[in-house]
Length: 348
Image (cartoon, rainbow, N blue to C red; front, side, top):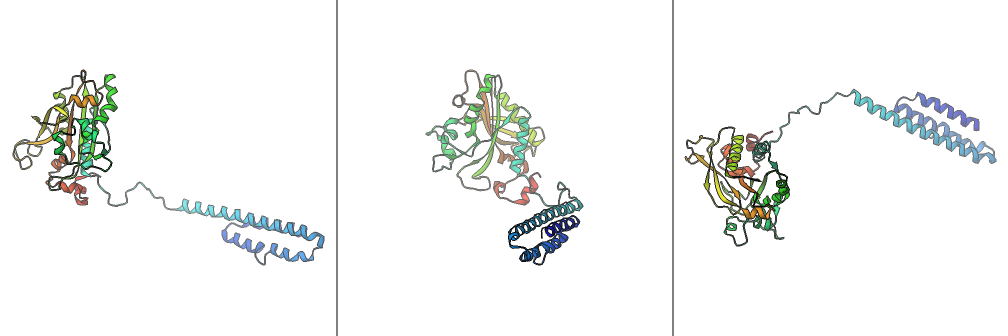
């Protein structure tokens, strides 16, 4: 019996070396450990073995059976892996970077124009900052010189949250945080030059020229000897970068709590080049954004030494700028999800 077990093992190893397909491995399994297989038959022959040897021979037969099972499992896994490699290597190569002919989405017009404005300011040393859309009452009002009893609060219909915070009504809500963040730059002899675009919210009725959700871009520059001339220079450069043509600007007196003096900045109409058209209401000028020299109280609350430093700030209406650039008369289309409009005005 022991010689027969050894002979079967040798026979199995010889056959296993020749099994080159999964089908041949399966046939080998049936031949050796199937119901009528060689190893299975040995178990039936135990009755012919002397009683004192049955236990030892039964153990050796089971060891042979386990050896066959393990060897077949290893060979099967090897052949399966080999098959996968062959399929992959013989498959047609696909360049996953090639266009598929699918229709791709477009970048929203507001995002596209915001990027143009940001690129202009970054090229002249400004940092682009982000900010939260939910802010404290202090950040939205007090920190920009709008105390609780200030009449300017009535100009902004605010969305109040149950926890006392607000949806920011203007990007100016980030001024205090940003001034504090970069105040140390001044001690190093560096100006603070920051722009911060963002989405704003006001609780007002929606119509062709008003939205409860809109986009602004705020900008600040603080340093020594900063003047209104710096403000005019940077605003003119930004507009010419966006409209890709010469743009004249002018300042008119305006009241805004966070600047003193405050101005309304007008730009020469880029559509009629100042000659007068329906877009500029035949005046040749387009009212663009509030701006001015940052109020000393705002600088103080931001940790700035007002004896040595001054700065200017401006709040650019990105939504309005998009409407001007594309000649839109309907503000609601910007938040409408109109794919046809986005494809025409956006970039890929």
